[in-house]
Length: 261
Ligand SMILES: [Zn+2]
Image (tube, rainbow, N blue to C red; front, side, top):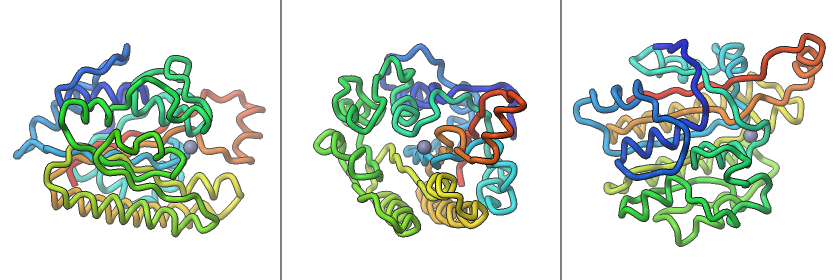
């Protein structure tokens, strides 16, 4: 089901906080449709997996629908689809906002060097403070500040072979789902972003990402979990940028998909 009303990426963390009944300081409102959807499932999911697909913007999501079939099927099969305003055109501040519900100028996690210096807690840390276990599968630099703060941290070193990188992220995400008391897993897939920056064949990147999501969705389904999938910012595509500059198009939005696979 596609909702016409545009959300903001800032609303994801408040929605998760409300679902898990913990307090989060954010001006952004929880998304009632998502909460209704989650509470109407039988049984009500006890666990959420949040996958950020780097550079998956709304236009990419529709332009590459054929290569992202699994993700579109998750929506068709009783899932929710929202269009979200972005908060930054860069990964680090965008993910900071997704995980805190705060704007970049509020959380101030703007570059890799800022990661770990912010006193503001992510939704994972807030859950852990309340005794609820969480996990993250992310790049090593982003993972460092989470060591000792959350139950399961899977740090994956950046590398030239981005397929291998995402394969590791996917495997860690699936393997940690075996932990029965887990409440929230965050993971970050980067193949589309790498291909966009280097001018690679985007349909290949979309297909690889689609397969990774298929595997994660199956694992989430086995746990009766809730799966959130979203982009972080617009895709940095050279030809599109030129067009945007000449046509003055509106800023990009990203999809947010919520489903029980
Ligand atoms: Zn990014």
